[in-house]
Structures are given as C-alpha cells and as structure tokens.
Image 1 (spheres, rainbow, N blue to C red):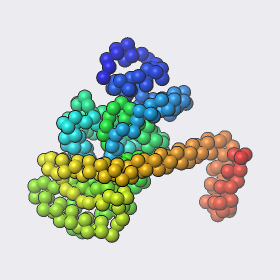
Image 2: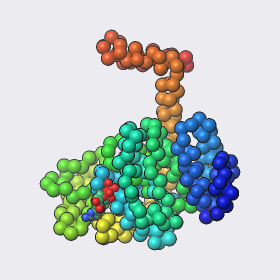
Image 3: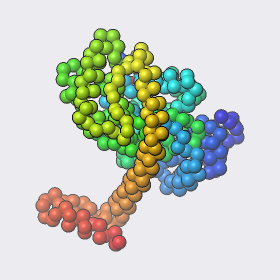
Length: 335
Ligand code: GDP
C-alpha cells in the first residue's frame, strides 16, 4: 500500500490517480474508485467507463465465490470464520454484497448491522456493502465492476454475498466461479424448504450451525440433501455438487469447505471449464448491459414517458392488446 498523503487529500482524482492508486493497492483510492463506479451521476459514468477500460487488463486473477442463503442462516458469521482462515494463509480477501432489499426499499438486510468485525479490521481484507439505488440489474453491474477493481488491487479471493431471495442468486451465479449455498437443518421435512432452482446452480451446499445438539440433525439433513442431488444435474460441467456441514461458530468444517473450493479451482482450471465459464459470463454480461441500456433509453424517451400511462390504462381495461400497445410505444422511438 502506498501512503501518498497528497493523493488522499485531493478532491478530484484524475484517471491516472485512480489507476495508479488501485495498482499500488492504496485502499483509500480503491474505496473512492468503487464509489465512482457506483455513482449514477452522468459526469461520473464516463470517467468510470474509462477507469474500467484501464484496469481491465489487471483484473481476473482471483477466485470469485458467491455465497447465498436466507437471512439468519449465518452468512456473515460464516464469512467471518472462513475469511479469518483464508487470511491466515496469506490470501487477500474482498467481500462485496448484492442486497436486493437495498434497491427496492432503500433499507437493507445485509448492510444495517455491524458485520464481520474481526476480519474488517484486517489490512488484507476489504469489505464493501451493497451499492444502493437503482434496479437489481444496475446494483449487480456496479458490484461486478467493483469486483474487477478489487482484483486489479491484488485481492485474490472475492466473496460476493447475497440474500437467498429469488432472482438475485441467478445474477450472482453469472459473476462467480463457485457458488455456495448455505442452508439450515430445519425440523420436519428437510426437503420442504429446498428451492430446486437454487440447488441446481450450487457447486456446494453447506449446512451451517452443525454444532451442539444440532449436529446429528445437520448430519441427517446432509444425507437427505445428498440424496436429492442424485436427481439433479451438476451446476458446473465435470464437477459433482455435494453437501457438507459446518459450524461458523466453532469453526468445525471450515477448512474442509475451503479444501473443496480449492479442489474445484484446480480441477476446473485443468479441464478448461474455469476459463470457458468466464468467457461465457462475459458474453452474458454484455447482453445484460445492452438489455438494461435499451430499457433505460426506452423509459427515458420523453414521448414514451408521456404516452405510457394512457397505454397502460388501455391495456388494463382490455381495450387494446399488450402486444399492440408495446409495438405502438416502441414505434415512438422512431427506429
Ligand atoms: P446472516 O443473516 O445469514 O448473515 O446470519 P448471521 O451470521 O447474522 O447469523 C444469524 C444468527 O445465527 C446469529 O445469532 C449467529 O450468532 C448465529 N449463528 C451463525 N452461525 C452459527 C453457527 O454455526 N452455529 C450457531 N449455533 N449459531 C450460529
């Protein structure tokens, strides 16, 4: 890390200041660069784009790990415990979050409480809460760009944390190499709570809170989920998804899950799946950004903004078909 105090004090940073700061692992500049890419202000978007273009060649050298699970499953406790373990081994860890609640309500499930206190004090760890504002797609894009900036700053392990509710797991899946689903061993029918769609995209399922009297119950749940996996094809080609147990509280099972992730990295790098997966993710992101941009252009168009409410009413009242209304509105773009 550089400690160039004159740069700290500068109100406005040039692109070169940002790039040099990031490549020199200056945390202050790193944080400011992320604030820049998170900004929705027009004058920031252009600079952010240029910054991304400059740092792109230095990004990519990390393993990107998505971590999801319902509120209360123990995500922050798990990240704290696993994070401490991997920092001890000399790695540098960045933890980024995608919190759908922050984009919908302005509030946040992930960000409000004091989280991961121990690792957040570690020099080798960088934690950034979810950007707020905008649609989920926009929040996710900002997180993806923040991830690339963290990689350029030398962070070799990236965690992307999200709450397990709906669409956002799919979004996280599209930006990580390894996707980890945290679960609880609930009482009663273990399979009841399984959302098949989420299991299908997981590279490992980890039952947390396997400690004290809960340990044998967690073991039973592990067997049940393992059986359920027989009927589901793997999320990543050439890799078999398995179920594990751990306790974020006692640390039991933590080094084992890290070994699983290391094994995944070695195997998929050898087979070429790791690289081909990232290539297709880049394409997927291109298409997502185009979709988002087109939508933005559409809804910002003055004539469309003006006509939309009346078309919506006509469609709602059954006066014209949705298809016809959509076509008429799109025609207003004049393309
Ligand atoms: P998050 O909402 O998914 O981030 O969950 P938290 O990490 O905040 O954990 C929710 C609650 O579960 C907290 O009271 C934790 O202390 C507790 N907890 C987390 N992990 C474990 C664990 O492995 N064992 C036990 N017994 N409690 C845990």
